[in-house]
Image 1 (cartoon, rainbow, N blue to C red):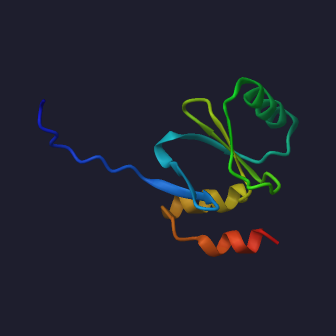
Image 2 (cartoon, rainbow, N blue to C red):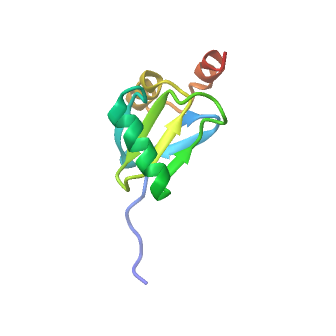
Image 3 (spheres, rainbow, N blue to C red):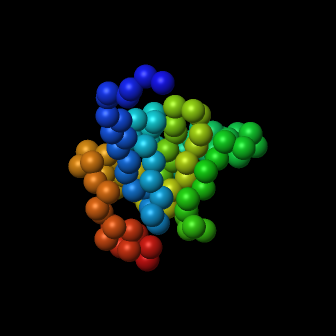
Length: 100
């Protein structure tokens, strides 16, 4: 086996309730309110490509990955976008504010 000289550094962000997603796999981060996004979610559910990490709460952000999986999060899209910009896994206090 060849020696592995490069270091793999995969970056994850918290998308709510301790769930993480690889930053490199995110294609789109959208709000779930529009009709086309609702259709996208329903199609993904029908095809088994949906990952629901809302813990029973209202969906506030939809994350689309490069593998065409659709991830439903209870954290607002803007908050997740800020975490992407900050590289932040340390924004746990945002979750408690949005749970109300």
